[in-house]
Amino acid sequence: MQELNEKELSFVARFFRRGLFDPARAWKRFRAANALRSGYGRPVWGYALACACAVALIGLFLFTRESRRWTTTTVAQTVQELQLPDGSRAVLAPGATLSFHRHGFGRRDRELRMEGTVYFSVERNEALPFEITAGEGFIRVLGTRFQVATDETGTRVDVVDGRVFFSASCPETGGIVLTRGKHAELAAGAAAPRFCPADSPNPAGWATHSYQYDNTPLTDVLRELGAQFGCTLSTADTDRRLTGQFEGEELDEIVFLIEEALGIQIEINTL
Image 1 (cartoon, rainbow, N blue to C red):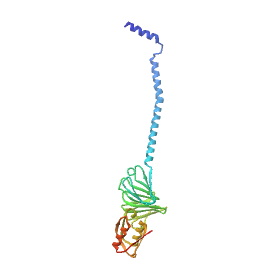
Image 2: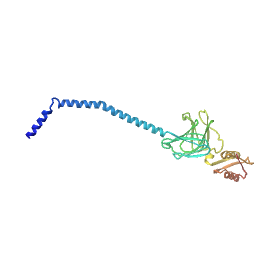
Image 3: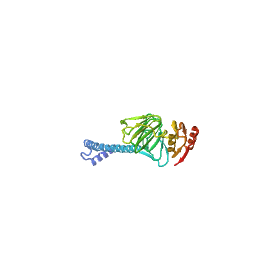
Image 4: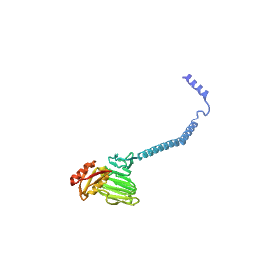
């Protein structure tokens, strides 16, 4: 034991320097080091946090921009049917264009833009209205069947079933509500749409393949069918009137049924 104590004293005597093991001095150094870390450490973490937030915000912006991107369908020369993500159906006439949000349609919104002539069969959703911007017109429905057509003269709406709100592109200016069989037009530059007679009894017949007539002059029937099928129809019995509903995509079949119902002959002339 005495030998061990002598070794310890020898070590202390060899390496001892005044102030080398000063506890007070060591404590000051410790406080200074922590003060330095406190002064510069926190801002570094702050910068890192700010960068992380910035990256998150940029990611959110890019995701939002991607989700709000419009997808567009344009039809050239043939009729095209389009199934929308919410289950609704759109039938585009030749030359029509339809756009909607690529992601979120039917979940976040049901907003569309269109040009030309499009027939819609809309799935009902009272919590998420179906809204269309068409030319200078604005259309809002919950669930119904209708047609919208636009050109340089304005925007036209024909309702096959249900109720449709129709206004100028700024709904706050006021609008009208169309019901089954009603037709309305918004002239280019006009402040609001107006009710008026439709050009034909079944403006959406090209898409629905359904033609309904109620004591309709036969001349109007033949004019409509000829326009729908791209031909001219004529008969010697121009004073007749027609009541009935006809379904189908074949003109020959529809003409045969009309001839049988009225006891007449109709001539089909292709253009």
